[in-house]
Image (cartoon, rainbow, N blue to C red; front, side):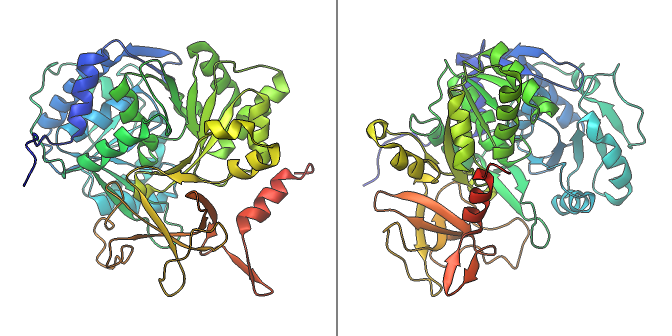
Length: 460
């Protein structure tokens, strides 16, 4: 017997329309190359999204076409997230920090038809454009007045590209399994690999990421994603914030500058933020050096690399609690989060410290297990270390256009390449990357433990 519930597709379009109808006055604040204090509402944003979708349609973009971005965290990049995906194309966010040869490979492998680029990265693309045969044109994320002189072929200023377009758009009905966005891994071994997200996977990831024991977002939240929008969709915040109506603060190209971050946090009363350890180290160093405070900031998520306890303690001195998150590009990226449970408030300090550096419990929707070299499951005893495997509705089933892909086994488990332990209470500890673990005297030694010990040394 089947249930009698409506079968409605889970699409990013539904997030956009919900935010436009119910959170229209929610605010987006951005630092951009041409404006250090741009602010507008979700209603303003989605009106421009419709204009952008019309502009793309007039250029002959079809469903499934890839459109690349090389851009920082700001409102124009946000508009691209929605206009491209909701019109049925694929928003391909490219990491501009990669080597030029890698960027060339990624743009060609994805066969991007158009590239939207921050003015800062125009010189980079000028050097590559003759080796990008599929690219038909470039749009620089700026105004016509500030458009830089460029040798890029068929180049437009973003504001000129959309200014005369209608403010209404007939959004297509999409299949929830249609591709919506594309992100390539860093390619530490071989060429970067493409992870192709679907509308369904993105919406499910968005719903879970906003849960109370995950990010805990609401319409009262003010969130600043410092993690780049070119890296796994800014950990999903460009979707979760509009869904709940949270205020979004985008730091633009100054995302690693302690002074800029402090100014934005205090001016916009940011309460929640996300970033890699180096970002928080820059913030702590600035606060310690200047004596300034960030009173509104209460919680941050740290991920992307192992975070030493010493940095967590330094942030806590400034009134900020750090939650360790773990995930991967292949996981959209959310896999686990280490939040502070009520029972832990009464723990002794050494127990709190031991708990804080772990990756936390896997969120609903993500299954995890550890296996030995033969593939046999290992116990959840907090001591047995093995290869971590995952599965779930927002975890990739294979890499884009890779016939040699063996990342998912016959039972549907994805090989993360991480070594880990799982405690009886489900708490996950990432001990190392398989390729980095060190064997000495018959024992496995974690390079992460060595790095953390070095970071805690007063001479470092």
